[in-house]
Each structure stands twice: as C-alpha cells, then as structure tokens.
Length: 334
Ligand code: PMP
Image (tube, rainbow, N blue to C red; front, side, top):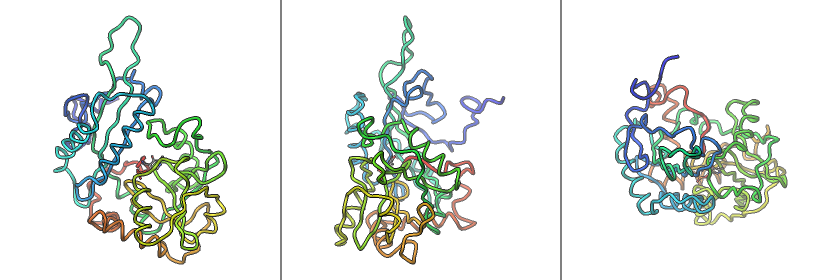
C-alpha cells in the first residue's frame, strides 16, 4: 500500500498549519500517538467556532465552553483561556490566506488527556495533547439543505442520558450520536439524525440543536439534555430581540409533527430549515417558513454577511467547487 502522509507529502491539506503542544506545524506533522487516550477512549474535549469572511464569530463563548468541558472531564490543558484565544487567532492568521472563494473555517481546539504510559517506559509525551486547528467548512455538501430544507430522521437510538454523561460537555466521545446518524443515513444518505432523549423527548443530533415554531412560539429542548449550542443561544437572543417568544421545554415528537416550522442550528449551519421530520412536513407552506426566514435574515445581519448566499454559491457550477474535495464528510460536529 502506498504511504500517503508525512515526508511523502501526499496529504491534501493545501498547506494548512496547526498548533501542536507548543509549536505551529504543517498539519501533516501533527501526529498523535496511538496510545493517546482520545484515540483509545474518546477521552478528550474540543470546541469549534466558525469564521465569517475569515473573522471568527463568538470565539470567546466557544473557548468558555471548552474550559467548562475541560473542567467537567478534569483535564488541565496547562494553558489559560486567554492564551488559548491568542493561539487560536495565531493559527487562524497563519491559515487565513488559504481560504478559497465563498469559503470559511471551523477554527478550534482539541485537548486529550494524553498518553497511557506503558509500565516501566517513559512516555514520548507527558500530559495532555493540545491541538489548535482550522478546517474548511464543507459548504458544497450542505448547500442543498439551504435550497430544499433538511430531511430529519429520528433514529431508534436514544441520546445517552445526562446522569451517565453530561451532554453539556463537548467531548470526543460521539459514538452515541454516530450510531443515530448511521441509522438515519441508512434510510437517506443526506438525512440529519435528531435523537430522542431517554424520556422520549426530542434532543439533538450529531452537531446540531433543533427548534420548532408552534403558534408563533419558538420551542427548543431544555439545556439539561443537550449541548448548549452557541448558535442555539444566539438564535434565542435574536428571537427575543425580534419579539418572538421562546420556550425551552420538553419537546415531544407530537410537537414536531404538528409544528408550523422546524429548523436546526449549529456553528456551521447557523440556521438551516427542515423540510420534513420522519416524512412529516411542517405546516408552513414555504421552506424556510416565515419565522425561520426572519431569524435567518437576522442571523446574516448579525454576522455581517449573507451566510445562506454563501452556501448557495457552492451550487453554481463555477463557484467554490474546486476548493472542496469530493470526499468531504457530509456531517461533522458543529
Ligand atoms: N449538539 C451537539 C452534540 C453538537 O456537537 C453541536 C455542535 N457543537 C451542537 C449541538 C450545536 O452547537 P453549536 O451551535 O455551538 O455548534
């Protein structure tokens, strides 16, 4: 088999760099040893913000959430939040020039507990492994969601309950959400899974929060059962500013099936309308419905660019496509 990384220069990272335990390196030289506990157990946390026209949005909030996740799993990264922010800006600066047209980055941090030592041997690296990186957002593979609305499927797999592992911490252990996603994508390769919690209420998906609009009220599951999405908080703020009432409450499938509008939020998606959930279309005749559209417009205004147009630009035959490898994952966690 042909060696595809390292000195052979076979990676396709377009020259991006990342910060790895104190140094900015070409991505291909960031090598986490196989005894790292993140690889073995998912024993790590991460957070990702996104850029709009190369400028990070709500990075401070993302770094705050990162440190909450670190406290929850009791990992000390050995770096202050202030320094983490500074390095994140440095990494973004180093990669900014590589952004293609209509493109933007996820920019974030990944911190594992470190290596499991072998008895009697000195580990090659002591303490946590810290990576700060930029990843191009897969606009092309997600753009159809903005044209047609997303197809949401609720799989049989339930979300791990908060008394087993808090969903409020963003850890590298996504297998529960991955299992839900596999089930949904087996039915429709473009579907987005939204899992139920163990009580049978709507919960969240692999990288997204869910919102319904019912009788003019914006409804979303309580934060006790979901990751407190930075986008979720942003959208709640935009709704309240626009005089749209918000209810954070247990949300049954019944509520979704009888909703006027449904949408998902995440760092990369911002707000993306849902065209059907388990084959049931929301009552509003348009996708996005009027309240969703209002919030999407407000979101674009807040971030200083038309983020929907940025997605849709990738559907035109001339724009952006060359920048994104065909194998880009359709789903990611933000
Ligand atoms: N839930 C989960 C499980 C997630 O991984 C994400 C992505 N971070 C979200 C919700 C949405 O959060 P945010 O808006 O901060 O991206």
